[in-house]
Amino acid sequence: MRVISGRLKGRKLTSIRGYGIRPTSDKVKESIFDILGNDFDGRVVLDLFAGTGSLGIEALSRGAQVAVFVDTHPHSIAVIKKNLLELGLLNCAKIFKRSPLKGLKFLKKISLNFDFIFLDPPYGKGFVDNTLKIISQSGIIMPTTLVVAEHSVREVVTPRVGTLLLKDQRKYGKTLISFFQGER
Image (cartoon, rainbow, N blue to C red; front, top):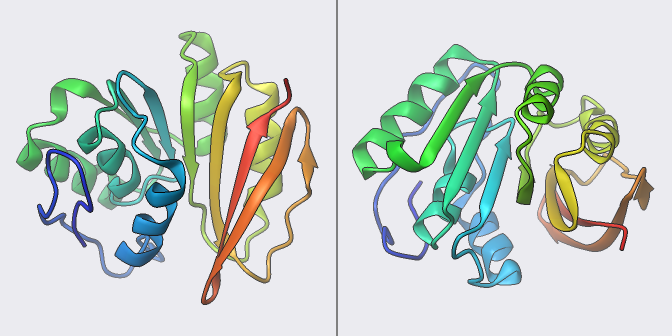
């Protein structure tokens, strides 16, 4: 696992084996960021179900101002901190050890709004639609916010979840990437 592009291009990331954690493959990550383009300068991103933090780190490498990482697993939190420290990114990151639901409620309380939200929950558990619903009601999105959800091709997502509308989907083997945007 590595940083695909930006100022940290090619740098290796520490990964996690076991614990039910499934890091986003470099191929899928590269495809996501090819679709999103390079407009990350000064942006604020949320990496929810962060795992190793690779999606938020990729955004930071491409110029994001701040990345917020939320995960409940202690091993994930330790790996995220290690990756950020080794890449010199601790000063532009916030890490919260919370469940996604509690993390979203907390982010609403501190009035953070996000330009990009990366959502990579465990496959096959039905988390995607429910989390998208909570995100749409959380007060942390703007009409221009783009939510990128990685999930199993077997997990059907609703084309409209609250104020979020499905704009695009891309399939990569057993992985489906769904792109949602706030209603304008």
